[in-house]
Structure formats: C-alpha cells, structure tokens
Image (spheres, rainbow, N blue to C red):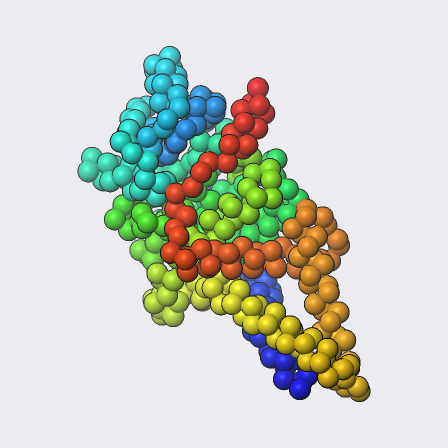
Length: 408
C-alpha cells in the first residue's frame, strides 16, 4: 500500500517542480545572448515623454517624488498625476510644490478622482485622457514611493530607438524588507532577463516602466484586477512589440517590514498574475507569438498548475505516513523509498520554514523561496475562490514612513 502514495507523491512532485528546473536551465542559456541596447537616435529627442504618477494618500513622500522626477537628466518630462481621492494633504502639497517650481516639468496636469476605485481604474482613466488628447509618445509609469536614478528616464527612453521594443521595465532595489525578499527578487529578475532575451517577459515592475502610447490602449486594461504593470507588459507583446526587462537601471523603494505586510503584498500580486494568465489562456499555444507563447505557458504552470500539484504532493505524503503508521514500517525497497521521501520532505519543510523566518541556509535558499512562493499562490487562489478581489488594498504605511525618513 505504501507504493501507491509514494508513486503519486513522486509523480506529482516531478510534474510540479520539473518545469521550474527546465525554465531555470533555459533562462541561463537565454541570458548568454542579452538584448543589445540600441544606438542613440536623435529622433528620440522629438518624442514626448509623459510621466504617469498614480497617487493615493502620499503626503509623506509626494514632494520628494516630484523633486526626483524634476531632477531627471536629458529628458523633458510632461507630468500627468492622477489622485485617487486622497484623504490626506497629497494634493495640497503637490499643487504647492508645482506652483513653487513652475519650470520643473515641460507641462503638468492633475486629475482628481471623486472616489477611490483602485490603481488600475486610475491608470486607465489617465491613459484615456491621453488618448482623448491625441497623445503620441512615450509613457513612463512610476509609483510615488519609487526613487529613480537621475539618468533613469534617459536610459529607458533609449531603448525605443529599437522599433521592435514596445515596453521596458527597470529593476528594484528594495530596502527595509526581510531577508526572503532579497532572494525572491534576485530569482525573479534573473527570470525576467532570460525571458527578455528569448522574446519578451510578461511581467515588469510598475514602479518604473515605460511603453509606447501606441502599443497599449486604456480599454485593454482590466480595471477589476491588479497587476496593471504585467497587464501592460503582456498586452504590448500581444499587440506585436516586445516587452523587456533592463537589469542595469534600478529604482529604489522600501519593502514592507513585517511578515504580514510582505505576505499581503505577495498574495495580492499573485492574484493579479493568476487572473492575467487565465485571461490569456488562448495565447499559451498561439503560433503567431513564437517563443512568447511558450513563456506564457510556463508562467501559467508556475502560477496556476504547480501550486495545485504541490497540494497533491502534500496529500500523498500524508496518506503515505498514515499508511506507515497503520500497518507499520515497510521493509526492503519500500523502506528505502519511504526513508528517502521522508528526508526530502524534511529538507523541504526546513527550507520553507527558514525562508518564512528570514533565515538562510546555503543550498536551501532557492528551495525555500520556491515553496514560500507556492504558499502565496495558493493563498491567492483561495482568495479568488471565495470571490474576493484584491485590486483595492490598504497602503503599507510603514514603507512610506521609512521612505520619508531615509530622504531626510
């Protein structure tokens, strides 16, 4: 009887984790031929750059954000700020800063929403306003708590000398977070670089990304879901241009400082990515998308299939242990199989527990990061199953306080 749950456990585990190993090997191979940064083009100087800044209750940091944008080198910026009905002094501070610094931007426009609907609806409304005005240029979306390098806009803009590039995103350098955040971020960015080299990555950082206005339309944004950055990156590729990750330009922000805060952030993000991948399930096998269809297919496995398979692995392990406890310890080959699986389970549980508590053990960090990610994905699935959408969320107040203090 021990054979049956043991075989099920091994089989489901292989199905769940095997594609991760395959993708990691593929990413390593793809990264050997990175996307080449294009030669500068004088034509870019004539293309307007609009910075889209969605805000909600950012009074602690809005002034430093505006100053950071105004300090960008070699790029004339048009600011479009949309406020989601802030209840603090965000708007008053922003208006006062803009009045005191009239030459900070080539132009500025403030959209004041009457009620808070979430970030995705705010972004959609801002994009609609640009489309109504006939805007044709580059759009840079950035978050209020993200500090950009002084050459950040110039660097991202330079990619659009290549006519095949439709969107590009930067890397995050997060402070104030727990140890597991660093491991998660490193792994995620490595994958983005590889996917970009292969074709495109479906996921970019909304804290600092840029795209051609012609490559994405407001109506293509699902306002009842979050992960607006991934929605844009994926749709740009579906619309015929590439979405790539630039690992050489970094923005800085502050990660949630508590386990609960980081978990809440990751579950929210996971739900948005799962919904995105499900909406585009017909594109997983689309021949017109070339290598991007296989990337979507693999990401769908990682975010949707693998967590459910791991539930099956856990159930088979429990059944195996229950069988052993009922009929006794097996002999011979079965004893070796049971003992090997028990050691693998102990290793996985240790890696998961250590990662959750911000502790690192050489050789187990990647396993712990992967298993913790599965936990967040399952939590996101359960949240969706209960009919709860996380596209509107409470702000991580600790990150704003720390960001304000760091600037001082």
